[in-house]
Image (cartoon, rainbow, N blue to C red; front, side, top):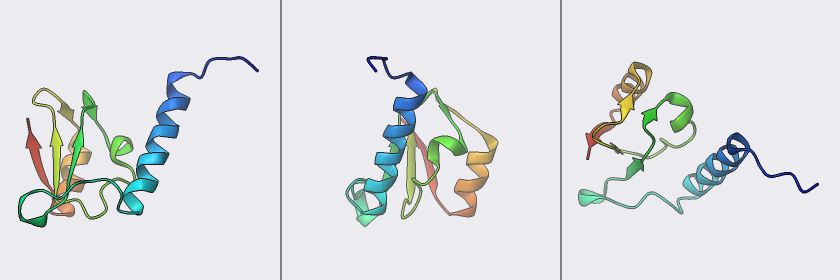
Length: 86
């Protein structure tokens, strides 16, 4: 069983670990004013990218050139989460 892990499998593991850490409040540092922000470095930010990661988030920080899908923008608006590009 010396097969290398494929990138999709590793990504699923990472996303699950992040989801569990967020749920336990172990990640997602407090920003100014006590607001929680989530930084995402993906080039394309989709709902799948954010699945299970928006609980308690007040600000989503993405790269200046990242593509944020319309569905994500709608979800952020529905949850009153600010979108910040850096």
